Structure formats: structure tokens, C-alpha cells
Length: 123
Image 1 (cartoon, rainbow, N blue to C red):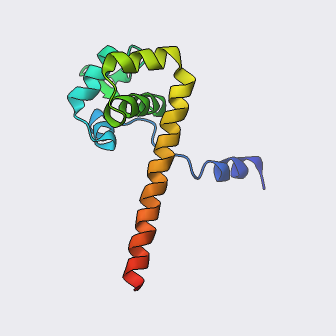
Image 2 (cartoon, helix red, strand yellow):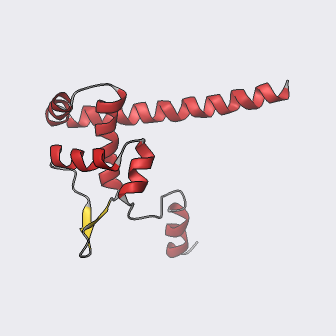
């Protein structure tokens, strides 16, 4: 297989979208757009790209990963913002890994619920 075709084959599972609007990101996490804007003020490393004269926010995958971490700590695990900041600043790698594990477990739970629903419909 030529190199170009091989590279394309490797990228099939990756998300092709480079930028997400604030509305799309808010819907992903079930939060208000104002919550995302507030988190941008509170967490200095969360800086989506602002484009055009209207300064429209454009979130990239790296921004979404930061939001996933913040969301996990604040909305899922119930930490206050100050505690979430402290956790992220003191143990960023550990917090990232825990957020990733939680996300994977939630995905697995959803898949298992879908399988159960299919099994129930067969009976």
C-alpha cells in the first residue's frame, strides 16, 4: 500500500472536525455556554481560539480535553472550582487519567445498557 493511502487508512477513526462552536461544546457536556465562558476565566490554560471581528470561540480537541477534565471534577465528582484548580495544578497527569478512565467507564456502561435493551427485546 502506498504511504499516502496507508496514512489515510490510519486516520479513519479520528475525528475530522478541527473546530467546534461554543454551542456544540456546551451540548457535548450538558452545560450552558455561560458556564464554559466562566471556566475560561477561572482556568487560564483553557483558551479557545477567537476568530474574526466578532471574536467567535473555536474549540479544538485539546480544549475539549481540558473541558472534559474540568467537567469531570466539577460536575461529575462535585468538587468546588477552587478544589478542582488545586487538583489540576498539583496532579495534572493523575487528574487527566482519572477523567479518561471515567469517560471510558461511562461509554462502557452505555454500551452495556444498549446490549441489555437488545437482549430484552429478543425475549
